Structure formats: C-alpha cells, structure tokens
Image (cartoon, rainbow, N blue to C red; front, side):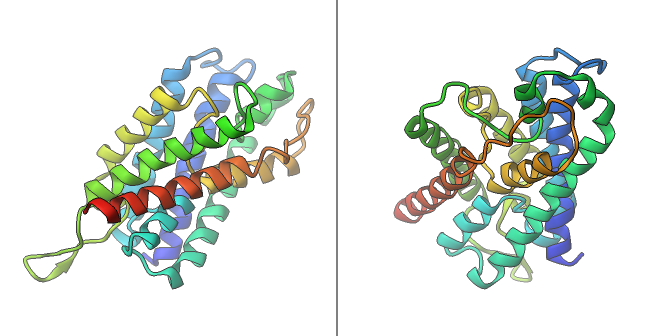
Length: 245
C-alpha cells in the first residue's frame, strides 16, 4: 500500500474506534451509555491496535504527527516525508470523526449536555490550569514516544536483506496498544490524553462543522494545548533517546 494512503486509513480507523467508544459510552440512549474510563481506555488502545495492523507494513504506522516528528528528530524518519504523513493523519482523523458523528447522529441530538458532546470529539482539561494541562500532554506523549523508540531499537536489516521499518508498526500492534491503554489509565484523566495533535484537531474541526443540537462551542482557545504539548513531548523524548542510546 502507498505509505500516505496507509497513514490515512490507519488514522481513520484509529479515530473511528476512539471517538466511537467515547460516543458509545457518553451519549444518551446508546446500549453502552454510562460505561466507565476503563472501556474508553481500552477502546482507544484497541483502535491503535487496528490502525497499526492496517498501516504498519506500509508506512510504519505513525498515525500521529507527534510520532512522525519524534522519529524525525531522532533521525529515524526523513523530514522531507513528514508533511505528507501529517496531512494524511489529519485527514484520516477528520474522516473517522465524521463517520462517528454520522453513525451516532440520533444520539447526539438526544444528548443535551454540550460538554459531553464535545468530549466525544476532542479533549479538554478536567481542571483548567494551562501550564499543568500542557505538562500533562507533554508527559503522556513523552512516555509514548520514548517507549516506542526503545521498543523499536536501532535500525537494522533482518538477515542482511529485509529493512525493518521504524514506527509504531515496527514494534508490533499489541505492545503499542497496551502502551496507549497504560497511558490512558494512568495519566489520561487530567486532559483526556490527546497525545496526538491529529487526534484532537481533526475531530475538533468536525465538531465545529457538523449540525448537532446543544453542541456548544469547540473551545478553540484550548485547541493549541493538545497540539503543542504532544509535539514538545515528542521532541523531548527523541532528545532523551539520542542522549542515552
């Protein structure tokens, strides 16, 4: 598969499953309404699992601009390829969120709380404290990128012939899924653990565009936090990796 198409499809499935579990557990009159944080954490983790299976063999399954930037800083990915990867991730995230809205449109219109509706699309802080909110996203993404880099290890060729790709796909789908579940369960309750700029920005754009009763604002004043925080966390993780390996 073309690597750019792989990034689009992998991110599309990731966000469809992730925003889907949020909608399924939060919106009024779904069979899963009222489900807890454990379901949401596993829903996102398994969404990553599916996305990695789809994109891993073709693109390394970055599925996340922070992963792309972190790998580029660490010298594991070409900077020239980063813009198209990131664009594909953003478009995939928008497509996944749009399909979630289309599937759950009746339930969105029965849900009256604007914060609940927005929370199925994008993240927000449990307690608004901007420096600490940024630190939360930096820390979660730092853990993600550092562990991915340490999982992947140095570049090598299997039997001197087959080049091993560096990215989420290079470490196997299940370990990465469990890594995301762990971050969600341990650190996610502070800001909703975006740890992925495309994951937050793409669905936030869709939230602003689609018609939903009682949806409120898309809180663009906060939108920079789940973009800048993950990017900074990825750069720090890559620098730590380069310093210790």
